[in-house]
Amino acid sequence: MNFSEENNKKIIKHLRNIADLIENNEIDEKTLQSAGEFYMKQLFIDEIEKTECTIEEKDMLKFLILGWYIYNFIITE
Image (cartoon, helix red, strand yellow):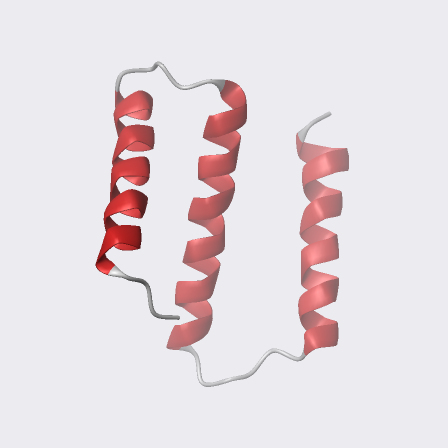
């Protein structure tokens, strides 16, 4: 995916704004949750790119469903 310099600047500004809100404890819960989800997704993608194995679509779906179940029924209760 190729972003223009203008789009990159918008993304940087937005992420910097979120980081400032977190550092200043001014972030609302919904935005913090969304930022955390983005962070975890990026960690997952980075980890996948380090490995040589491929993840089949069916296995990925199982993994995502399991994560959703754990989050909704175990962590949030």
